[in-house]
Amino acid sequence: MKTIAYLNSFYARASDSFIRAEVIQLREFGHTVHTFSIRKPPASELVSAEIIDEHARTDYILSHGVLALINSALLELFRAPLRMLSTIVTAVRCSNPGLKGRLWPIAYFFEACYLSRQLLAKAVDHLHDHNGQGCAFVAMLASELSGVPYSLTIHGPGEFDQPMVLSLTDKIERSRFAVAISEYGRSQLFRWSAVEHWQKIHVVHCGVNLESWVAHPIENGRRLVCVGRLAREKGHVILVEAIARLKHLPHFEVVIVGDGPLRGEIEARANTLGVQDRVRVTGWMSGDKVREEILASCAMVLPSFAEGLPVVLMESLALERPVITTAIAGIPELVQNGKSGWLIPAGSIDALTNAIRELLVTPLERLAEMGRAGAVSVREQHDQAREARKLQALIEHVGKG
Image 1 (tube, rainbow, N blue to C red):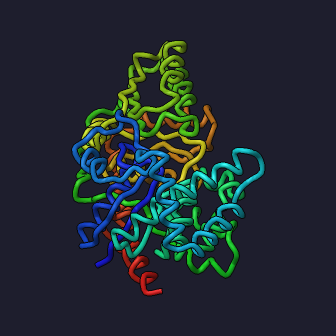
Image 2: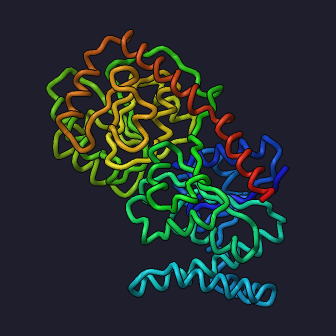
Image 3: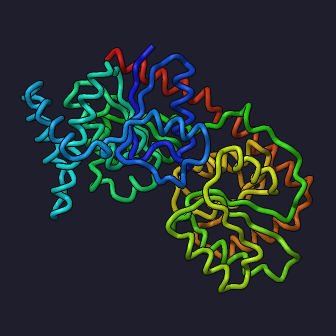
């Protein structure tokens, strides 16, 4: 069995259910998994005993303060001066123009010095990063300092928006392997890596625990649910616009589960358009509560503008609830238009409105049939244990490298 370290920018929160499940699954396989995070998540996301437990087990790098990071750098300098010099060169080479572009790699370097010391102290065999952005830079530098091999899972879409700024090519090149969560995601990593590195890029799907997500019959055909961080890319504002276009229909409700920077704007827009009685924002919920909300609905609606491949779609389909979502990124690899849900163009209020209208007049028997078709796809592609085994095999293989 391996000793593995996991790194993320924010860890142990409501919105990283897949990463948390993967960590727990690897522990159940017998591996020791230490979790690290650059920052602490907001207290509002500590919504279950499982999340609170993971929060307590996680080492939050910035919480130690600047002096601790500087002290780690000095100790690393004495331990491995040549590695330190090489790592500094890597950090400088990956910097970007402008003051912030020059300063960020310095911050990442000091964070990496702390992480390197922890990896060595805990005798870590492999470091896995779950984000291709800033914390992946920290993982790359900590790997170079410590000699512990690293890998990364890249979800998108943020990494695909600014690959040059994020030095995505360097991160893939220096990793032992890189993971995409969909075939689409892998294609984007192919775009930003040399052909000779394509063989190290693999697909490991996000997964759900199929034993936990047990379906029940659809009882309420007038209730939809939308789960996710309330941020611009999720499309909540046009969802409210679509609901307003349909407010002449017999009463229906959309429950929005989640929180984030756009919450005030979403609630204000619902009030302005006169649909506050049809839109309910709950804030963050535990996994059990999210499951209850999905089961109380007839379908999931997620009109995102940019995505990787959302776990909430898998969870909805696993519970035999069809979905309305956008035909972007990896979503069409899971959702089949007309079979397990409605795939619509991103950003189209007309298409979203029409899809919701069609769903509301679809018989419950047909919705259940669509949900069952989606559940088959989830079982075939997104079984949590099977996907974690794929990652385990990669870690064990490269550990011999």
